[in-house]
Length: 279
Image 1 (cartoon, rainbow, N blue to C red):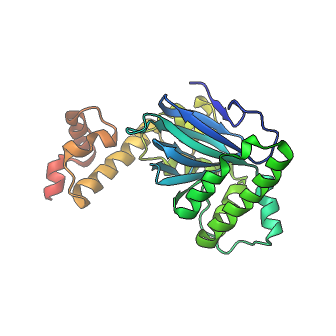
Image 2 (tube, rainbow, N blue to C red):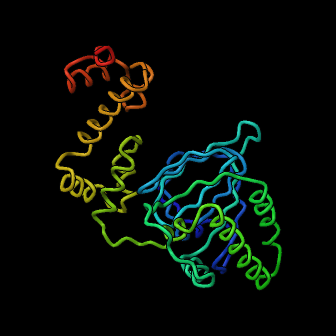
């Protein structure tokens, strides 16, 4: 599958550090490999979106929007059942824009919460008005566009930190040098997401062969065996604690049919899923 680089491959010429693109599509995509060269707000308007990053994943509808850090991700876009198309207003900005904002408003970290690559927010009336205000900017001359977009960037960031704090800002500009820690975090964050080895390799920014070597070095097991073990352990939790039926969960756990799930479960735990529930 071809890697799509954004915003480079969008059909608009923007030499501006901060830019807006009104993206519409009548074609669905599933787990498209995306390289974000800039940080991006995806203000979803129509359809649904699912993203997988190294340490976080979200599925949203058009009551929500995402802030995504630059880097590798997998993206699924589905069309709106009502409108019949997918639409998202993309708002791109660089790490330097974030640093300038932090310096200008003399912000400092307030806690040491975990840093993520993507954040989910819910629309309110302010955000909806803000997104509407972005749509006409591209029609203006470049110098005016730059000044307005600079102001719009400050506006959305000031609004979000009022309610969410500043930790998400520091997540955006954080570039962890600990490759091993990032690799382990990518695996553990996606252990229940049904991603292929190739997709996980892409999120880890590695070739498949390098990914497999790193995996066995850190987890002392092959990827297929390790993920199967984790998903079966999760199935045992769902059966016991969530009163799920085996027929409800076998696909979620990654099995093509119920009988193969029951066989694998019994091989691991010594009892069938139903026996596990009744014990």
